[in-house]
Each structure stands twice: as structure tokens, then as C-alpha cells.
Length: 297
Image (tube, rainbow, N blue to C red; front, side):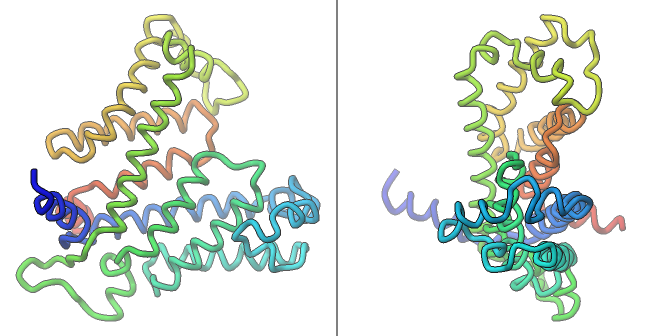
């Protein structure tokens, strides 16, 4: 392959216009998950974010001053500040979900999400990392140009011949690549663990009462089933990185991934990690499928 061909392939992949409907759907689903997270924090804000909560404010300020992007570092260490930042977060996420003033709401949602995750740094999980990364990259997408209040207010911009809105997808591509990196990297580090290699990891995860929401079926904790589930997770995570890009395999691996994350949600206590990952999978949906879905409503 020539250098020109490589450059053309690069430009086609990142800059040839594609439909904005998948990233618009992601914006909506992602916004709902962010709102669930916000309501969870609001329910016990004093404990999670308060000046004398899990992370005492003075210690947090000493550790993070000049090192982190967080609104909490620019507000006094009081519950009033916590309420203001949470209120701003809820407002930004609501605007994001509705697609109202998305160039502004995406930036605000990222700043408040980043601030809340940083403030509660000792109680974070993988879902928080996914939320921060996706919220940042979402800023650079045309996610508000479809399925949004903005699209209603500022008039249709769809091409007359296709009825679609086509934009360069470079930011969406970065989000898709990030998702694939997460799956591949997770599989890679799991393979370094002996329990994953010998097929017993699922047993230790699901039999531990501290980390489960529902009781895992006891018959599935027998050796043959445990090994099948353990190695099946590894195989799926390996298959997702390439499989999501291939038309013939995309929906098969997406469906399997959704089932895997639903199982994680039911039998492991990983907060909203599964919801963030399922939302991110929406980025790979076919635009026609998204439009058909919304035509039913």
C-alpha cells in the first residue's frame, strides 16, 4: 500500500462525513446515566462530597491544589459550595440530555463531571473514568445537531436528498477507539492474573458477598460453568476490539457485550460502570437503526 493510499484511508476514516444520529443517541443515553449518577450523589452529598465527608476538604485541597481540574478547588469548603456545584451539574446534564445549547452544555457537563469524580477520588470506579473521557470527547462532536432541542430551535440542517445530517466524525472515531482500547486493555491485564488463566476468576468475583447485588445461581459456580464464563469473558473482550468495526460481526458482539454488562450490573457491585459502557456501544449503531428507533416514538 502506498503512502498516498494510507493518507486517503486515514482521511476517509476520520474526516469523511457520516451521520450524526449515533452520537446524538449516545448523548441522550449518556446524559441519562450521568443524571442517575448525580441523583446518587445528591442522596447523600454530605457524606460523599461534604467538607467532613469521605475525603476531608482541607486534605483534598492540599493534595489537589494546582494538580487537578476541579471546581471544588475554586469554591470554599462548605456544603453550600457542594450544592452549587451539584446544581450546576444537574442543570448541565439536563441540557446535554435534551440537546439544548450543546456547545455550552457539553463543556459544563465535562467540567462538573470531572470535578465530582476528582472530589470523590477515593470512591471512584471504572465507570467514572469512562464518564470523564467520553464527556471530554463529546465536546468536539456535532451531537446536538440531531434528536435535540437545538435542532428544533435552529431549524433542520439535513441534506435534502438523504434526510440526514452528515459531519466529519473524527471525535466520534476517537470515542469508538477509546472503547475498543478499554476492552482490549481489560482483557490484556486479566490475562496476567492466574485465576483468569486457569478459569476460576468468575467464581471469586460472584461468590464474594461484598461485591454482588443478587445471588449468583449456585449451579453456575461449578467448575465447568465457571471456566466457560471466565474464558468466555476473555474471548468476548478480545473479539470486541475488532468485531465492532466489522459489519458482519458488529451486532453479534454488541449484543453479547450488552448481556455481559447486564450480568456485571446484576451480580457485581460496580455502580454505573455497565451503563456507561452500554451507552458507549451506541456509538457503533447504524444511523438508519437509530432513526427507525426514534420513528417508533
